[in-house]
Image (cartoon, rainbow, N blue to C red; front, side, top):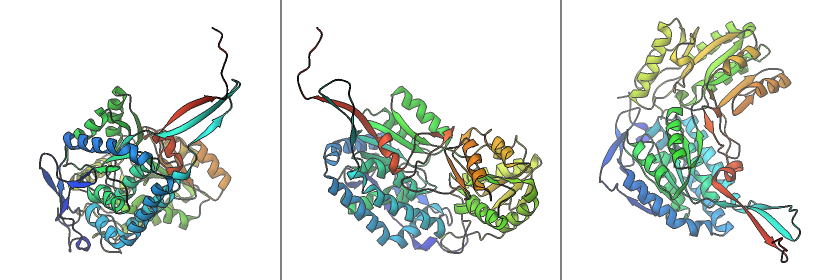
Length: 496
């Protein structure tokens, strides 16, 4: 795969190894693989190709570090995260270049990721001072009862490539801030920005050796590491962000080991435009929500429903805006639609669009690949049997549909097996809230587009989009054990 022009910002990381027990190391087998730029095709890094043996070494290192990190004083933990935020800010330009080179991420979305990561770290710094439990009333005289939250131990984190900095950070920082230790497995498509970078930053910030460990792997070899972490009795929790198919397989295996997971899986996210919406605003919101990071965000709008009185004008304006979005080199600040992550992803998008067209869909914008990019594409009249109408297509393709009412849009959206996020744009705020309450999704944004996240919010979905919630405000529910403790103020009388 090759793109026109120079490689992104000249960024290179000649060697990306595992980070285990505070040391950078090669894979036990000595194998590695070349990580290539999705834009230029050039080799950016030679990356350690790990396997189950490396995963077990990392888990052992995390387990050995747990007691010390869990017992660290609150201010010691706090300082690590505050210093890490400063490190990220200082390395901003380097980070933006790395995101562009490794994942094809343009400057706008790179800035979104970096800002989120910095806020995540600074908000995590206060978790060390959050109450660890509460006193409970007891009907047994002379008994003091407490519910106490304790870190679980080793947490396995499996993060995707698409928002690599943000989603890897989300996977590890909450568990770490609560006193757990972590083994992170990044995607083979983002071994640095979704893995080794976090090890660098937190190590520089003073995180003790072994508290965070990173194990990378070659393409097609994630399963061996995932299986090893699931089977290892020292791993107490797992979090995974990725496809529903992979999440289902992990959940089945975790069930055999009685291991709890947090799963954030696929989305088929609706954006509903009511007839009383401000048309200019609705078009702006839909363009951003559909095409940011070339549609490779789990929250991106996949279907846009428009009430009939606005439908024709909205379609014309939306398609024109999509067709005009600059496409190309992600290191160019003007680029909106950069390369998709790899050739397989490009071929899948193209196949699904061509299938939809073959079944009668109309192409209002885009629709013709320009390797390694796929242009912003708007489809109308897509039949329900088309794959793109019901599965998650991870790319800059949107299905546009006219409805007689926003309530009809809600009903159609709710037929999906997926339920991550939705948005509603309307001039009637109370109606927007009523529509939000009727949508079967984990997140709804009224008068905004769906690509939103904040570190402390409860992020997650329903139905086949998974279970559990990310977000620092809810991390203790997922990554702590709740222990009931009682203490007697006096001896008790027993009936036998």
